[in-house]
Amino acid sequence: MRPDSLQDKPLTVFQRRWKKFKTIKRGWYSFRLLLGLYLLSFLLPVLVNNKALVVSHGGELYFPAFEQLMPFMTSHHSAEELGVFDPRRPDRMMRGEANYRLAETQYEAADKGDWVLMPPYPFHPIENLLKEPGFEGRPPTTPDSTHWLGTDDRGRDVLARLVYGFRISITFALSVVGIAYLVGMSIGATLGFFGGRVDMFGQRMVEIWAALPFLYTVIIISSIISPSLWVLVGILSLFYWIGISFYMRGEFLREKAKDYVAAAISIGESRRSIMLKHILPNALTPIVTFAPFAIVGGISSLVSLDYLGFGLAPPTPSWGELMGQGLSNISAWHLVLFPMGALFGTLLMVVFIGEAVREAFDPKVFSRLR
Image 1 (tube, one colour):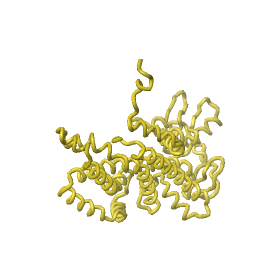
Image 2 (cartoon, helix red, strand yellow; image 1 turned 180 degrees about the horizontal axis):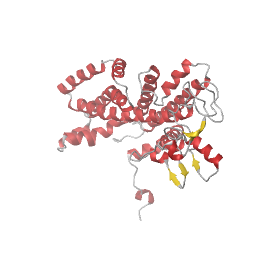
Image 3 (tube, helix red, strand yellow; image 1 turned 135 degrees about the vertical axis):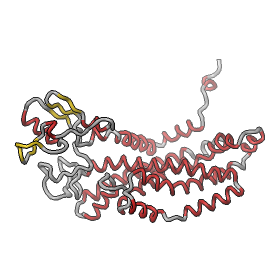
Image 4 (cartoon, one colour; image 1 turned 180 degrees about the vertical axis):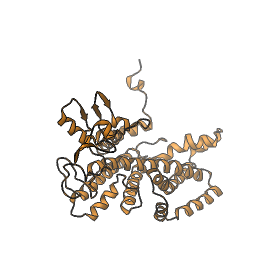
Protein backbone atom coordinates (compact mmCIF):
# COMPACT_ATOMS: atom_id res chain seq x y z
CA MET A 1 0.00 0.00 0.00
CA ARG A 2 1.22 3.49 -0.86
CA PRO A 3 1.26 6.03 1.96
CA ASP A 4 -1.74 8.35 2.06
CA SER A 5 0.53 11.31 1.39
CA LEU A 6 1.55 9.76 -1.93
CA GLN A 7 -2.03 8.88 -2.90
CA ASP A 8 -3.27 12.43 -2.45
CA LYS A 9 -3.41 14.37 -5.68
CA PRO A 10 -1.17 17.45 -5.49
CA LEU A 11 -2.90 20.81 -5.50
CA THR A 12 -2.72 22.93 -8.62
CA VAL A 13 -1.20 26.40 -8.51
CA PHE A 14 -4.65 27.99 -8.54
CA GLN A 15 -5.88 25.74 -5.71
CA ARG A 16 -2.89 26.66 -3.58
CA ARG A 17 -3.48 30.36 -4.28
CA TRP A 18 -7.18 30.03 -3.46
CA LYS A 19 -6.31 28.24 -0.21
CA LYS A 20 -3.89 31.03 0.65
CA PHE A 21 -6.54 33.66 -0.17
CA LYS A 22 -9.01 32.06 2.28
CA THR A 23 -6.43 32.25 5.08
CA ILE A 24 -6.30 36.05 4.74
CA LYS A 25 -9.41 36.64 6.83
CA ARG A 26 -9.90 40.33 6.12
CA GLY A 27 -10.02 39.77 2.36
CA TRP A 28 -11.92 36.47 2.55
CA TYR A 29 -14.73 37.81 4.73
CA SER A 30 -14.94 40.99 2.64
CA PHE A 31 -15.26 38.85 -0.49
CA ARG A 32 -18.02 36.73 1.01
CA LEU A 33 -19.93 39.74 2.34
CA LEU A 34 -19.65 41.75 -0.88
CA LEU A 35 -20.59 38.77 -3.05
CA GLY A 36 -23.56 37.98 -0.80
CA LEU A 37 -24.81 41.57 -0.87
CA TYR A 38 -24.46 41.74 -4.65
CA LEU A 39 -26.36 38.49 -5.20
CA LEU A 40 -29.01 39.66 -2.73
CA SER A 41 -29.38 42.92 -4.67
CA PHE A 42 -30.97 41.00 -7.56
CA LEU A 43 -33.88 40.21 -5.24
CA LEU A 44 -34.52 43.88 -4.50
CA PRO A 45 -37.83 43.93 -6.44
CA VAL A 46 -39.25 41.61 -3.77
CA LEU A 47 -37.38 43.15 -0.82
CA VAL A 48 -37.41 46.92 -1.42
CA ASN A 49 -40.30 47.94 -3.63
CA ASN A 50 -43.62 49.77 -3.58
CA LYS A 51 -45.27 46.92 -5.49
CA ALA A 52 -47.04 44.29 -3.40
CA LEU A 53 -45.80 40.74 -3.24
CA VAL A 54 -49.34 39.36 -3.19
CA VAL A 55 -52.74 41.08 -3.48
CA SER A 56 -55.99 39.28 -2.76
CA HIS A 57 -59.02 41.18 -4.04
CA GLY A 58 -62.45 39.86 -4.93
CA GLY A 59 -61.25 36.26 -4.77
CA GLU A 60 -58.42 36.94 -7.27
CA LEU A 61 -54.70 36.82 -6.49
CA TYR A 62 -52.19 39.23 -8.05
CA PHE A 63 -48.38 39.14 -7.81
CA PRO A 64 -47.16 42.60 -8.92
CA ALA A 65 -43.60 42.41 -7.50
CA PHE A 66 -42.91 38.95 -8.95
CA GLU A 67 -44.45 39.96 -12.27
CA GLN A 68 -41.96 42.85 -12.37
CA LEU A 69 -39.15 40.28 -12.49
CA MET A 70 -40.67 38.77 -15.63
CA PRO A 71 -40.67 41.23 -18.57
CA PHE A 72 -43.25 39.24 -20.53
CA MET A 73 -45.85 39.71 -17.77
CA THR A 74 -47.67 42.91 -16.87
CA SER A 75 -46.93 44.18 -13.35
CA HIS A 76 -49.18 47.26 -13.52
CA HIS A 77 -52.62 46.90 -12.01
CA SER A 78 -54.98 49.87 -12.05
CA ALA A 79 -56.46 51.32 -8.90
CA GLU A 80 -59.93 50.67 -10.30
CA GLU A 81 -59.08 47.02 -10.89
CA LEU A 82 -58.06 46.61 -7.23
CA GLY A 83 -60.77 48.88 -5.79
CA VAL A 84 -58.45 51.56 -4.37
CA PHE A 85 -60.20 54.90 -3.88
CA ASP A 86 -58.79 58.39 -3.57
CA PRO A 87 -58.46 59.23 0.17
CA ARG A 88 -59.25 62.88 -0.62
CA ARG A 89 -62.42 61.86 -2.54
CA PRO A 90 -63.69 58.59 -1.04
CA ASP A 91 -66.48 58.52 -3.61
CA ARG A 92 -64.00 58.15 -6.50
CA MET A 93 -61.47 55.57 -7.48
CA MET A 94 -57.86 56.62 -7.88
CA ARG A 95 -56.53 56.98 -11.40
CA GLY A 96 -53.56 55.16 -12.84
CA GLU A 97 -51.61 52.36 -11.19
CA ALA A 98 -52.73 51.25 -7.77
CA ASN A 99 -50.97 52.47 -4.64
CA TYR A 100 -50.44 49.17 -2.85
CA ARG A 101 -49.58 50.70 0.54
CA LEU A 102 -52.84 52.65 0.40
CA ALA A 103 -54.69 49.53 -0.73
CA GLU A 104 -53.35 47.65 2.29
CA THR A 105 -54.70 50.33 4.64
CA GLN A 106 -58.09 50.49 2.91
CA TYR A 107 -58.48 46.70 2.81
CA GLU A 108 -57.79 46.46 6.54
CA ALA A 109 -60.29 49.22 7.28
CA ALA A 110 -62.99 47.66 5.05
CA ASP A 111 -62.47 44.18 6.59
CA LYS A 112 -64.04 42.35 3.62
CA GLY A 113 -61.46 39.59 3.35
CA ASP A 114 -59.16 41.41 0.91
CA TRP A 115 -55.51 41.73 1.91
CA VAL A 116 -52.10 42.90 0.67
CA LEU A 117 -48.65 41.48 1.45
CA MET A 118 -45.99 44.18 0.93
CA PRO A 119 -42.19 43.74 0.67
CA PRO A 120 -40.19 44.12 3.90
CA TYR A 121 -39.32 47.72 2.94
CA PRO A 122 -42.27 49.04 0.88
CA PHE A 123 -40.69 51.97 -1.00
CA HIS A 124 -39.27 52.35 -4.50
CA PRO A 125 -36.12 54.38 -5.29
CA ILE A 126 -37.78 56.66 -7.86
CA GLU A 127 -41.09 57.02 -6.04
CA ASN A 128 -42.03 60.58 -5.04
CA LEU A 129 -43.62 60.52 -1.60
CA LEU A 130 -44.65 64.18 -1.32
CA LYS A 131 -48.36 63.43 -1.84
CA GLU A 132 -48.36 60.33 0.32
CA PRO A 133 -50.73 60.31 3.32
CA GLY A 134 -48.71 60.85 6.47
CA PHE A 135 -45.74 62.51 4.77
CA GLU A 136 -44.84 65.39 7.05
CA GLY A 137 -42.48 68.30 6.52
CA ARG A 138 -40.63 69.54 3.48
CA PRO A 139 -38.00 67.29 1.93
CA PRO A 140 -35.37 66.30 2.69
CA THR A 141 -36.67 64.74 5.90
CA THR A 142 -34.48 63.07 8.52
CA PRO A 143 -34.62 59.34 9.35
CA ASP A 144 -37.65 58.05 11.22
CA SER A 145 -39.45 54.78 11.84
CA THR A 146 -41.04 54.85 8.36
CA HIS A 147 -38.09 56.03 6.25
CA TRP A 148 -35.09 54.53 8.00
CA LEU A 149 -32.50 56.73 6.29
CA GLY A 150 -34.78 59.68 5.60
CA THR A 151 -35.80 61.14 2.24
CA ASP A 152 -33.89 63.20 -0.31
CA ASP A 153 -34.70 66.71 -1.55
CA ARG A 154 -37.31 65.31 -3.97
CA GLY A 155 -39.15 63.26 -1.39
CA ARG A 156 -37.68 59.88 -2.38
CA ASP A 157 -36.58 57.25 0.13
CA VAL A 158 -32.81 57.33 0.71
CA LEU A 159 -32.42 53.68 1.75
CA ALA A 160 -34.20 52.47 -1.39
CA ARG A 161 -31.96 54.65 -3.56
CA LEU A 162 -28.82 53.49 -1.76
CA VAL A 163 -29.45 49.77 -2.14
CA TYR A 164 -30.50 50.04 -5.79
CA GLY A 165 -27.51 52.33 -6.38
CA PHE A 166 -25.24 49.64 -4.90
CA ARG A 167 -26.38 47.11 -7.49
CA ILE A 168 -25.95 49.61 -10.31
CA SER A 169 -22.46 50.62 -9.13
CA ILE A 170 -21.16 47.06 -8.79
CA THR A 171 -22.72 45.97 -12.10
CA PHE A 172 -21.21 48.98 -13.82
CA ALA A 173 -17.73 48.38 -12.41
CA LEU A 174 -17.74 44.64 -13.18
CA SER A 175 -18.96 45.26 -16.75
CA VAL A 176 -16.35 47.94 -17.43
CA VAL A 177 -13.51 45.85 -15.99
CA GLY A 178 -14.64 42.72 -17.85
CA ILE A 179 -14.80 44.43 -21.25
CA ALA A 180 -11.60 46.41 -20.63
CA TYR A 181 -9.71 43.26 -19.61
CA LEU A 182 -10.89 41.34 -22.67
CA VAL A 183 -9.84 44.11 -25.07
CA GLY A 184 -6.70 45.19 -23.21
CA MET A 185 -5.36 41.68 -22.72
CA SER A 186 -5.92 40.80 -26.38
CA ILE A 187 -4.15 43.90 -27.68
CA GLY A 188 -1.33 43.78 -25.11
CA ALA A 189 -0.69 40.07 -25.70
CA THR A 190 -0.54 40.59 -29.47
CA LEU A 191 1.91 43.49 -29.21
CA GLY A 192 4.12 41.75 -26.65
CA PHE A 193 4.25 38.39 -28.40
CA PHE A 194 4.91 39.51 -31.97
CA GLY A 195 7.07 42.54 -31.11
CA GLY A 196 8.99 44.30 -33.89
CA ARG A 197 6.96 46.48 -36.21
CA VAL A 198 3.67 45.15 -34.84
CA ASP A 199 4.66 46.35 -31.39
CA MET A 200 6.08 49.67 -32.59
CA PHE A 201 3.09 50.72 -34.68
CA GLY A 202 0.62 49.24 -32.21
CA GLN A 203 2.12 51.17 -29.32
CA ARG A 204 1.92 54.43 -31.27
CA MET A 205 -1.78 53.83 -31.94
CA VAL A 206 -2.42 53.05 -28.29
CA GLU A 207 -0.60 56.22 -27.22
CA ILE A 208 -2.65 58.32 -29.64
CA TRP A 209 -5.86 56.82 -28.30
CA ALA A 210 -4.69 57.37 -24.71
CA ALA A 211 -4.20 61.07 -25.47
CA LEU A 212 -7.93 61.58 -26.10
CA PRO A 213 -9.48 63.52 -23.18
CA PHE A 214 -11.81 61.13 -21.38
CA LEU A 215 -13.89 63.72 -19.51
CA TYR A 216 -14.46 65.86 -22.60
CA THR A 217 -15.60 62.79 -24.52
CA VAL A 218 -18.17 61.96 -21.82
CA ILE A 219 -19.38 65.59 -21.71
CA ILE A 220 -19.86 65.70 -25.49
CA ILE A 221 -21.76 62.40 -25.55
CA SER A 222 -23.88 63.40 -22.53
CA SER A 223 -24.84 66.64 -24.26
CA ILE A 224 -26.04 64.73 -27.33
CA ILE A 225 -27.85 61.81 -25.68
CA SER A 226 -29.06 60.92 -22.21
CA PRO A 227 -26.54 58.20 -21.25
CA SER A 228 -27.90 54.93 -19.94
CA LEU A 229 -25.95 52.42 -17.84
CA TRP A 230 -24.71 50.45 -20.83
CA VAL A 231 -23.82 53.55 -22.82
CA LEU A 232 -21.58 54.65 -19.95
CA VAL A 233 -20.12 51.15 -19.71
CA GLY A 234 -19.20 51.36 -23.40
CA ILE A 235 -17.66 54.82 -23.04
CA LEU A 236 -15.49 53.93 -20.05
CA SER A 237 -14.47 50.61 -21.61
CA LEU A 238 -13.07 52.56 -24.59
CA PHE A 239 -10.49 54.07 -22.22
CA TYR A 240 -10.04 51.53 -19.42
CA TRP A 241 -8.39 48.90 -21.62
CA ILE A 242 -5.33 51.06 -22.26
CA GLY A 243 -3.67 50.49 -18.89
CA ILE A 244 -4.42 46.76 -19.00
CA SER A 245 -2.78 46.47 -22.42
CA PHE A 246 0.45 47.98 -21.05
CA TYR A 247 0.58 45.42 -18.24
CA MET A 248 -0.14 42.50 -20.56
CA ARG A 249 2.36 43.68 -23.17
CA GLY A 250 5.10 43.85 -20.54
CA GLU A 251 4.30 40.38 -19.21
CA PHE A 252 4.34 38.83 -22.68
CA LEU A 253 7.64 40.53 -23.52
CA ARG A 254 9.14 39.12 -20.33
CA GLU A 255 7.69 35.62 -20.56
CA LYS A 256 8.41 34.95 -24.25
CA ALA A 257 12.14 35.22 -23.58
CA LYS A 258 12.11 32.31 -21.11
CA ASP A 259 13.25 28.77 -21.78
CA TYR A 260 9.84 27.10 -21.60
CA VAL A 261 8.66 29.22 -24.57
CA ALA A 262 11.73 28.24 -26.58
CA ALA A 263 11.02 24.60 -25.73
CA ALA A 264 7.43 24.95 -26.91
CA ILE A 265 8.61 26.48 -30.19
CA SER A 266 11.16 23.70 -30.70
CA ILE A 267 8.52 20.97 -30.46
CA GLY A 268 6.35 22.69 -33.06
CA GLU A 269 3.66 24.32 -30.93
CA SER A 270 1.55 26.84 -32.84
CA ARG A 271 1.66 30.53 -31.98
CA ARG A 272 -1.89 30.40 -30.69
CA SER A 273 -1.06 27.48 -28.40
CA ILE A 274 2.07 29.18 -27.09
CA MET A 275 0.18 32.40 -26.35
CA LEU A 276 -2.88 30.83 -24.72
CA LYS A 277 -1.56 27.67 -23.06
CA HIS A 278 1.99 28.63 -22.08
CA ILE A 279 2.51 32.38 -21.77
CA LEU A 280 -0.96 33.58 -20.77
CA PRO A 281 -1.28 31.51 -17.53
CA ASN A 282 2.10 32.84 -16.37
CA ALA A 283 1.24 36.42 -17.35
CA LEU A 284 -2.03 36.60 -15.42
CA THR A 285 -0.65 37.22 -11.93
CA PRO A 286 -0.25 41.02 -12.13
CA ILE A 287 -3.47 41.30 -14.15
CA VAL A 288 -5.54 39.37 -11.60
CA THR A 289 -4.09 41.27 -8.64
CA PHE A 290 -4.86 44.56 -10.37
CA ALA A 291 -8.53 43.65 -11.02
CA PRO A 292 -10.01 44.58 -7.58
CA PHE A 293 -8.36 47.98 -7.74
CA ALA A 294 -9.73 48.44 -11.26
CA ILE A 295 -13.20 47.75 -9.81
CA VAL A 296 -12.56 50.50 -7.23
CA GLY A 297 -11.71 52.82 -10.12
CA GLY A 298 -14.89 51.85 -11.97
CA ILE A 299 -17.15 52.56 -8.98
CA SER A 300 -15.37 55.85 -8.31
CA SER A 301 -15.69 56.89 -11.95
CA LEU A 302 -19.45 56.32 -11.98
CA VAL A 303 -19.93 58.17 -8.68
CA SER A 304 -17.80 61.07 -9.94
CA LEU A 305 -19.67 61.35 -13.24
CA ASP A 306 -23.04 61.24 -11.47
CA TYR A 307 -21.86 63.87 -8.99
CA LEU A 308 -20.80 66.16 -11.85
CA GLY A 309 -24.07 65.59 -13.69
CA PHE A 310 -22.59 63.68 -16.65
CA GLY A 311 -23.50 60.19 -15.48
CA LEU A 312 -26.72 58.22 -15.43
CA ALA A 313 -29.88 60.05 -16.43
CA PRO A 314 -32.24 60.95 -13.57
CA PRO A 315 -34.14 59.53 -11.78
CA THR A 316 -31.78 56.52 -11.85
CA PRO A 317 -30.66 55.66 -8.28
CA SER A 318 -27.11 56.92 -7.93
CA TRP A 319 -24.68 57.41 -5.07
CA GLY A 320 -23.05 60.35 -6.83
CA GLU A 321 -26.40 62.10 -7.27
CA LEU A 322 -27.15 61.63 -3.55
CA MET A 323 -23.77 63.13 -2.67
CA GLY A 324 -24.57 66.10 -4.88
CA GLN A 325 -27.80 66.55 -2.94
CA GLY A 326 -25.82 66.39 0.30
CA LEU A 327 -23.58 69.22 -0.90
CA SER A 328 -26.61 71.31 -1.85
CA ASN A 329 -28.33 70.54 1.46
CA ILE A 330 -25.37 70.45 3.81
CA SER A 331 -27.63 70.78 6.87
CA ALA A 332 -29.34 67.51 5.91
CA TRP A 333 -26.73 65.31 7.58
CA HIS A 334 -28.28 62.05 6.40
CA LEU A 335 -27.70 62.99 2.74
CA VAL A 336 -23.99 63.36 3.52
CA LEU A 337 -23.40 60.55 6.00
CA PHE A 338 -25.22 57.61 4.45
CA PRO A 339 -24.08 57.89 0.78
CA MET A 340 -20.49 58.56 1.89
CA GLY A 341 -20.67 55.65 4.33
CA ALA A 342 -22.02 53.27 1.68
CA LEU A 343 -19.30 54.29 -0.77
CA PHE A 344 -16.56 54.09 1.86
CA GLY A 345 -17.66 50.66 3.08
CA THR A 346 -17.92 49.20 -0.43
CA LEU A 347 -14.56 50.53 -1.58
CA LEU A 348 -12.91 49.41 1.67
CA MET A 349 -14.13 45.83 1.17
CA VAL A 350 -12.92 45.81 -2.44
CA VAL A 351 -9.49 47.10 -1.35
CA PHE A 352 -9.28 44.38 1.33
CA ILE A 353 -10.09 41.81 -1.36
CA GLY A 354 -7.43 43.32 -3.63
CA GLU A 355 -4.77 43.15 -0.92
CA ALA A 356 -5.62 39.51 -0.20
CA VAL A 357 -5.58 38.58 -3.91
CA ARG A 358 -2.24 40.33 -4.37
CA GLU A 359 -0.71 38.41 -1.47
CA ALA A 360 -2.25 35.08 -2.52
CA PHE A 361 -1.05 35.47 -6.13
CA ASP A 362 2.46 36.55 -5.18
CA PRO A 363 4.69 34.66 -7.65
CA LYS A 364 7.45 34.44 -5.04
CA VAL A 365 5.18 32.15 -2.98
CA PHE A 366 3.43 30.02 -5.61
CA SER A 367 5.02 29.90 -9.04
CA ARG A 368 3.91 27.82 -12.00
CA LEU A 369 7.57 27.47 -13.00
CA ARG A 370 8.81 26.31 -9.59
